[in-house]
Image 1: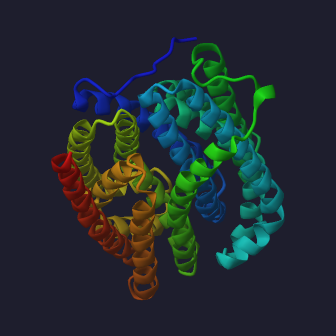
Image 2: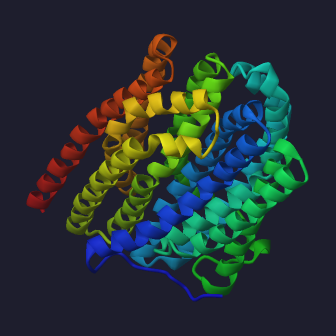
Length: 449
């Protein structure tokens, strides 16, 4: 097992720190997405379009659950980062115990409530009849794996809060390779269809969670505790749910909107639904660097807020937002040049490929916008301005849903792309003025001091 990679970001050169922290996050998020990406490719190639549409529909629900968990983890990681930056190790460990306890309770609730609610959810999403049986099977397997999903996200967030973004990635890579192998075995060789794809994901997630926990027990005494001491600290739980609850609501708002949007796309038919599913997978990978930089900005900002270094916090924001802009421009270039070959990875259906190309022809020029919004969100979370971050996200998804409902009937999938551009632009209209307000307030406080 490798040694500790805990890093304090309260001193030193900012750009190398953010880059070193972001690169493992990019790889980790890439492999996290590859769980479902592999399922999508294998199902599309070896089962068919109806099953592919079913998996794509389930992805929206799974994303909602994962983002709900990660939202609470972000709130907890801000507190952990503050404690770490301030050198309050006892509070850091108490926060870890509290977060694990809350996460396991959440997993139990999802498992108990999710299984009986599967069919009503799919009816609301207007899942096509030919995809319904496969969607039901896949979703129930994913629900069963929620405890492992929760534990991995908690331990990964805790490690990132103390500056270690490398360790979760190593174990995620291993589990992703396992997922690929099991997908091919269960689906392509044994013919287990969507059940096999879901089972492969469940087993792989279990491996990543258990390995991450084992590493903490052996190498990170700041975060390790005997499970018999697991408990909820009421005071910390209140702060965690205050920070994390708002972030969870913020992050869940996005997939809730996506579920509504998915319903509009489903109404266009199986080909459009399958094309949108594949296009979203490509888009998710393209936006990974921006999201990872945002997470790095959150950890950096939280540590420096804990250390009460406003000047370094400000410089970190400027460096991070510059990285976000470069990332977005690079994504646009790649997607516009390779949108046809990228869609061909998922299918040989010419109509499905054409639908995906039409979508990217609208949205492909504008990927700098979501990257910039991610940078602002990372900063706002790190400074604990969760309400403003939430309002910005609610504005974005509300505009997206409204424009989608208005445009998709006449424009088809390109209408969804237009809606994304409108939503991202509206989000920046929240973030930029508030950021300037914070700068003015900090300037006034400095002069008053």
